[in-house]
Image (cartoon, rainbow, N blue to C red):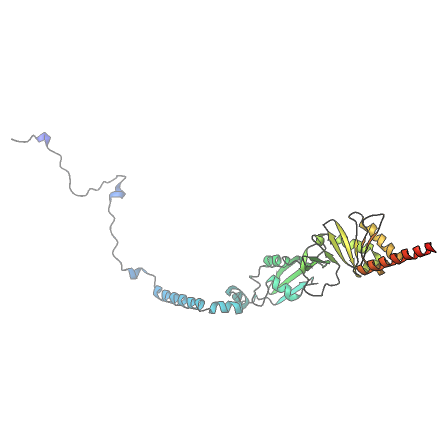
Length: 309
């Protein structure tokens, strides 16, 4: 039985087809392969020598760091960038400092971070200013770099104003109460002394009272702030004088009058209480109290004898 010719399947080409003019031509076309080239021939000329030099430098640098030589070099000559800058002529040859009073030149250089290993190029003037102003004795600082090799530093120091004793420690303070430094020597022993919590911030009140004392000021050793409200003053003979919270300058004038009229400082008195405007309360020492008791006792005896006679 013969197959019907109309039922035959169409003949399909078996080889690759090239679709000319098709949008997918670039996707289906096979590109010719490049001619094979050895990998070594593709590298730039001399790359092997450069790699060998780099490996040698890396090995030497690692050994230099691990062995401690790099750290020792930095400690002796400073960081590499500073060394290079100094070699190029940008070292710090001169430092001018103005406004010095309580600080030494060396203290300023250390605070600003200036030493022979520093170069002018990489010296941070703003950071040096911040470090200087972090010192309590320095209120304001200006730092300028002057090429090729000079630094100019201008300072405004806080002047020592008084001594402040609190919790058994002694400090030098400025007029605004800022602690300048701990009192470690006798350089500022001439300054007036305030004692007690927050007395540093009210030292100007005490100094005003000393001024009111006139000739008695030379006998005042310290001012003691009591409960952050009022002042007691300590005299050089050991006497304590208690002043009122309000108008203490009037009480100070009363003390001057007592000294002028009664030579109160020569009495054997431990304390004077001037807090009441109409009276003076004196506390005698034990010896003075005993002597006064004996005196009163003898006076009473004498009166009794006189009455009997």
